[in-house]
Image 1: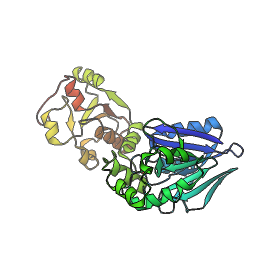
Image 2: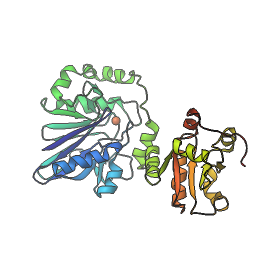
Image 3: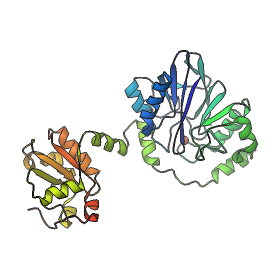
Image 4: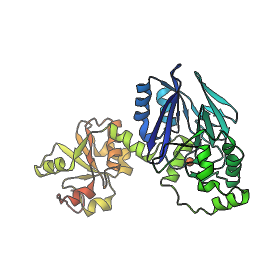
Length: 346
Ligand SMILES: [Fe+2]
């Protein structure tokens, strides 16, 4: 069996494949690692045929939708998943076939209603149902400590104690354990009475994961993260450094239109000398009257360098083929001690 584990912070993804058929599945891929997964599949000579999320993740951005678009293979989740873009919905007791490999589904609700574990040969991909020395939390949307109790004590923990546990998270750099090890040492599994277990899960008082709203929004809808929108915009515009712009401003270069896309009050408090004002929110509506010549070089700038990247990408989309964005923003410009002019537009 082809097997690779990829850690992204505390998130664990897995590539499992059949050496004979060269088909593979990717389990719980994370958006920032797409090139890494594709590189691993290429190195092993396998083709990814299934993109699987063990559940709706609240703590990281799933790569299944984007990889499905690139590879034209199905996104696979449990049938209880709320995501509309899932191509193949699995139920308890069903299997995915990859050559000689069988990926068997156990529906294990509790961490979320759509949580499933996948058994492949001697390994159990437990998602967030069972972690090394912990369990998934049950206080996020669709979490249910009663259901987690049943999934653990009446399903997962009754499997072969020698089965390797491959969780969707580990924050301490451990790669796997076994069912037997977890039964013996996992502190969350020592309360084996239902009421005690449920009470313990209800009183954990965990902090919310960072980006929980954005992760749930994008993982459940297939929509884009803010970082992805910025990366896509950044991939289609060139940038100019702060130092390069300063040199051009000091040389009095008039070839370059510096376009400040912040709001008027920020502009009037201090802008790059000679910069013109066109707030991002009005860009499309005012571009024809304010920037009639699409052949001009236009450099967009904003406070932090993000909105200006979106603005430059919009200008490029509208035919301004020489639009560039400032690499950084007015905050960094001021901190560098570069010249600033206050007041209204010239
Ligand atoms: Fe999770």
